[in-house]
Length: 319
Image: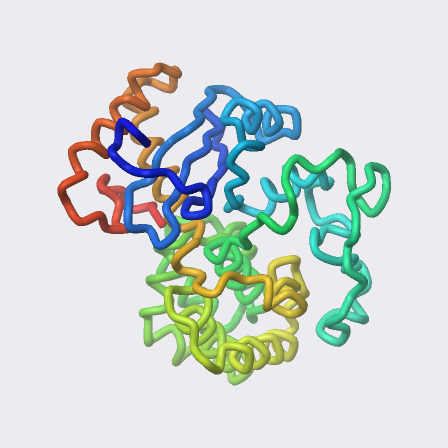
């Protein structure tokens, strides 16, 4: 931070952790996204495991700074010592039973998770961070909502066939599972023709999803956001969407979301993820200190410019 000419107040930054097939990385993101991301850890050929996360946090002296953690729910589970995957008790805030489908969409208040005891309630290890320092990832929750919506669609209906025609490069398996990335979701959100081809139940769920994205999961929070979220959940239930962990957070832990999701979104971290991927290709997948020096040199060159959340690299698959 000294070299970049900035003061570092830990409460003003959040730590984003992510991994790809080639590397595990951690980066500091400024709350409000006024400054470029600052990489603090990069390890080649390391996967997202509890042991590796412990080493990473120790190396960057996390215990001294206590940044809030912004990451996808898999990383969140690992740093909190939970078993990964869709386990019975996969929520880190309460003892929500993911298998009790007869209670989903009906029971909102579940017993609070008071402690993390290894061997109980799907806890496998001692937590590495405080659960109160976790920021729920708006982008990944948005991806999860899209996934649940598409999975519940009529696969022989005009709406799904429109998606199939629109994204010809996606496999049938990915389409049926609703696996999309950010740019693809933005394309569908802007596609007026798609909405016209939906059934009545699909259309109601889709419109309410768009309203939640625009008025809660983005940079704007409407005064009526609770009503919008409740309406979306009702429409999702009518459509037949199974409740996932991401939907559960909206259903039972709406107050745990940050005041402005756009200011602390994981989207900024995903853009860094794509930028550093370009660097990794340039260095042929081999870790080299010069790679991060290259990236930081780019930050110094941009110091006199107004920073934008738009990535400096052109990549059609970025968020």
